[in-house]
Image (cartoon, rainbow, N blue to C red; front, side, top):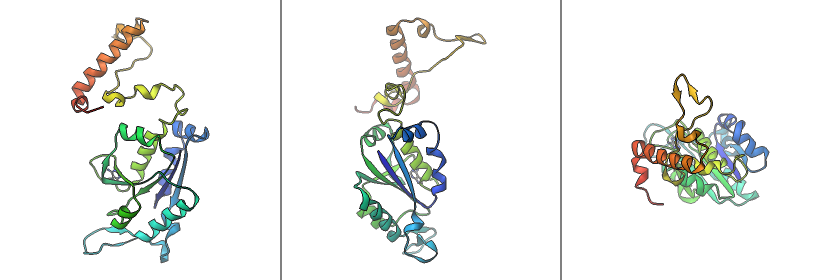
Length: 227
Ligand code: ADE
């Protein structure tokens, strides 16, 4: 999978992909993440990429021309399955969407700033708009990093234990069960007997029951979702 991120703040996106699982995904050749500074594509003086909005009102809008030129420059070299715009009025990101996106090949992600991007880019280039939650960030970069992380770890071969993503919270619409490690008795707080039983059936049943209990307590909405 290849992901090209168009941003006015490429520096913000250096660290999130340089460590741990995202680093491994790239070094194994399973994921390529490229960031592109939007200012390099603008035809305007002083690397201008935003302007006042028509109709008046506070806040700048990202101009269509630099965005169109950046997208078209990338499209010259390959085709893209999705051109994604990170925006608080997009579709709410969740595990199901991460699963679906992890099956794609090449994607562009555009990070918005200020009041957002000119509507014409949304109409004519963007194929998917994603929000990571009902709050407004100062830009789309951190949201893009979250989406790439959630997708990247799902790519086959990225996680060492191939099965581990299958048991994450939200796969099957259930939260993950509690987990414990050594010691079995920490300050008198004991690990549940079932987990120490050595019987896979007992362990699986306990985990499933705990998942259901936790989901019912914390996220009853998930139990009513389809699929
Ligand atoms: N840009 C600003 N806020 C955002 C959000 N909540 N999700 C995605 N992109 C954003």
